[in-house]
Amino acid sequence: MSPFPRGPFRAIRRYTPDRRPVEIDLSDNTNRWGPHPAALQLIRAAAEEDLIRYPSVYSDGLRAAIARRFGISEDAIVTGCGSDDLLDSVFRAGADAGDRVSYVPPTFVMVEIFAHANGLEPRPVPTAVASDPEALLEGSPAVVYLCRPNNPTGEVAPRSWVERLLEAAGPGGPIVLLDEAYADFADDDFLKEAAASQRLVVLRTFSKAYGLAGLRVGFAVGPVEVVAEIEKARGPYKVGRTAEGAATAAIEDREAWVQGIVSMVRNERGQLVRELEARNLQPLPSGANFLLIPLRGRSASQVTARLRERGVAVRPFPELPGIGDAIRVTIGPSAEIARFLADLDEVLE
Figure 1: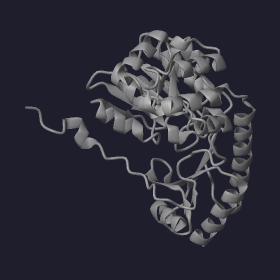
Figure 2: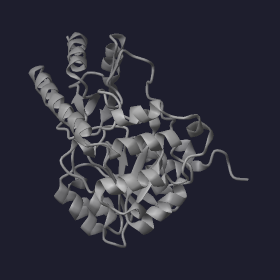
Figure 3: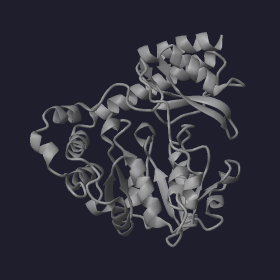
């Protein structure tokens, strides 16, 4: 009889972020201005039938809305219970036990967790080495993961670098999994390229710019034959009826609301950078709705704990490679940022 738990599971640590209630939560990169109004209106009008009936097996209505919004084929789209559900599904569909997953740390924490959960070997490639994208292809990985903009750093890999990676990977190479959870806040994306490609898969979410994190809805775009395999790994009924309806209403609504959110995030992000620099702190350049702030010898855990005592939550990142201790701060309305800065001043004095 095989041991329980199986080998790779012994390496997994349960993901346990601090989710205790707090007055101002700037820890999880959600939309601090609230949910998309079209989605909220649909949820408020939900009927009894929406609760007692199963949802669409593969979210056909939402897939059709996404296809219309971005001008791509429905067959190139698969939905999931958040984009991390699809990350997990790509690993199951695209790699055999023992295969490698390449990525550049620090990045999304669930990559390593899902790799181990699926019996895969995580292969971190140091940033200095990854300046040459072909370094991620060494060791014949089954999947190459890239988060753009990256979480937690906010870095946006140059488009030319991604194009070099795709060219080097080639049509018979690994799946290149491009996580664009924060792409709404950046200047460009690879959605249409993914739909027309042979091995590129792009992940998207409704949790950030659309303000629907509590509904857990995401989607992936990629080659039709690859998406079909991801859909099998994803399984049926992953997106609830109300969640699908809300996400559909949001993506079908005029883009002015989302663009307004993006504009406010960019403005507040620039202002926060200036305020931090005035305090001799150097946040990393970011194309996302958050900033990573290195703490110059201070403890990320201690700073986070002291901010929480004052009613503000941020995310600590101890001992990041090449960075050291840092905190990640979600961009929110000016009043919340002013409160964060005032409390940070007290903590750091």
